[in-house]
Length: 275
Ligand code: ARG
Image 1 (tube, protein in one colour):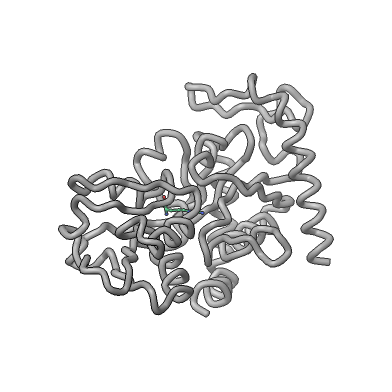
Image 2 (cartoon, helix red, strand yellow):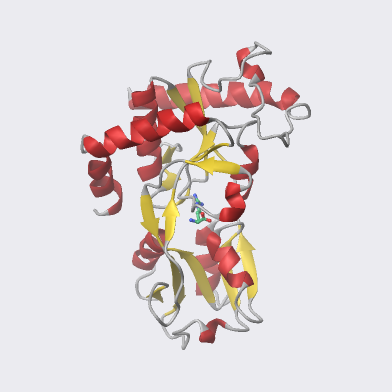
């Protein structure tokens, strides 16, 4: 049953990507904050992205435990379970598109309706998209080789630091004196290069850092970026939404609130994050 649904999702994703291509030129984001009509529904006057009964969700499944590619080749993880539960409450089918993290924000309103990807609310992103209510607190962690002398933010100065392209970890490196960001499309590749000695440290969100830390237990050590030695700020994850679509924002937030109230949200936290 699960598998059949996954295959259907894949087929739908492919069909959608197929017909989406021809729109790419005309469906450029506009500047007045109005969202583009979704031509997939076939009606030119159609403004509701859910009119076709499908919520097209973008993610980047390189971020365990929030999203990763499961054994069946489909995106799995906390965010995937959460957005499916939200879709169920909203009465729409959820179709997930796995794409590069760095292109998620720009794809909202054209290729995808919303994005869920352990995405931190930032002022810069708010210029391009709206965010749902926050659903998880995070902070950046620093991963270094087990024998590294790095133990503070000052120690990161002048260092070569692996990050996932376009993430808040990437933005932190911009502010570290003389440091170079080695940008990867997948955080795990940054960690592999840490093990190879190509980078001195990796900055990535707490929970994925803990997953990688567990995976390479004897070779790396982790620092909590919230410690006084690093002083990184708390971050909050939310679902990125098309700018100005208050109706969609309300239905997503209402669904999220219901899932919190009925215990589903906490169950998913236990199942995927705190297990
Ligand atoms: N929280 C960080 C950010 O918003 C990293 C998110 C990376 N997510 C992912 N699915 N790869 O920039």
